Image (tube, rainbow, N blue to C red):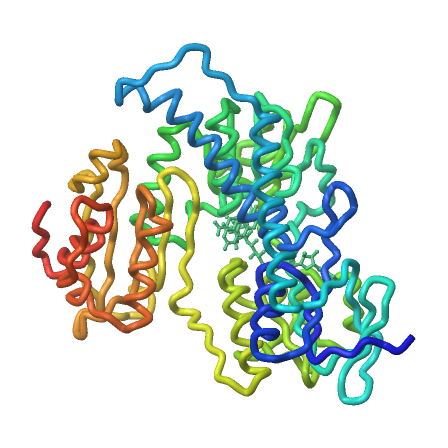
Length: 473
Ligand code: FAD
Ligand code: NAI
């Protein structure tokens, strides 16, 4: 049997890889994608970390737990009360699995529609061959003229404390906890720590988060981080900053974590389950990087230039396995850009306008520079802020926490950063991203007609606030 030949082979079927494959196929390449993720029955489950144990299932659980929280604590304000409210965790997990499956199946459909050949199994380099590459795709051997590596990342474990997914949980185990733990510990108050901590706190767990750094959400605008810390504390999340985690011991009963608090006092945290969310490491396991001399950096990430080119001709790498933020939409944009570059077009990713969202309640979203970054860079800026408390739609929703904050250049008024904490921040941030892509000024947004009553009016008002002329505050 002759070896199958492809113009482009994508290794990894997460958001970076599957989008790169589709875009490359749209551009006329003969494309294959290899992905090794297995569902519970051993079959394929396209979509990578994001679809299987990341973005999608976490948002499904956040939604279910938020409904429960609303019913228990907020619906009474609307005159709605219910007796005997119960949370069926098994059903919540089954719904989450169903949402994941819909997304898995959606990608299978998209591959068929775009004529992308799919191989289920591990993809690895065998050798450089005939100006291209010979690869293993599961049990098969295939040839590619060009290769896109999109192998993603894995959860980082605490040194000497491997994940057992029973007591010490990565993001995978954190999304499969079968019953609400009485006491839940999290190491790391980053994005996963806050999202997963919120899910289980809403469902009744006593949640303690141990964070190594002395500052809360250091990458977030200080004003937003301060507001978030206040709200999360009120909700009952116990977030301890500046701790040093020591020995972690598991027993039948649960987990005990020895740590030193910010004052240097030795303490122990006893919990039923411990989620370790201290960042992620790029994944090149079994890729055969050595077989072809693919260059990795000291963190294990594949070394790429600004165009996602590796040190090997015709080999590109995108998403979590390379530098930059570990976000699904960043991976997707790189996938599109690489496919277009392979076709001789000018693929483009603007790192300055990649939005970030933390899907807690309230949501936190931002794009561009924080106030502390502008200060450190010596940039002269103006700030404008508008609270949701003064927004009619937020009052009607019954969710007036937080604000929208604009940062604009002091001289040109160009928007340099937008920071939102509050209802639907994840949706509101898109307007700011569009504005920054078009290099808009705060005045541009202030002059745009926004629907009333809508949360987006808070965005317009924050833009007005830059020039100290809010209308409703
Ligand atoms: P991945 O999604 O990791 O996909 C890589 C794929 O490659 C996997 O299917 C893997 O099995 C496969 N693979 C690896 N090596 C091989 C090989 N040698 N052969 C074959 N297949 C291979 N980001 C957001 O933007 N928004 C969110 O809300 C969000 N929530 C998250 C929640 C959690 C709990 C976690 C853990 C992450 C979250 N992320 C979120 C981050 C997001 O999941 C990643 O940034 C994104 O998945 C990266 O995409 P990728 O394509 O680079 O890699
Ligand atoms: P993270 O980088 O967001 O947060 C890790 C936290 O752990 C940091 O605050 C860090 O200071 C702390 N930490 C590190 N080592 C520690 C130690 N030994 N002891 C105590 N604290 C320690 O990483 P996280 O939460 O694991 O998420 C990984 C990535 O996944 C995120 O950076 C993000 O890119 C992505 N993600 C995105 C989401 C979104 O977009 N909504 C949701 C979840 C994850």
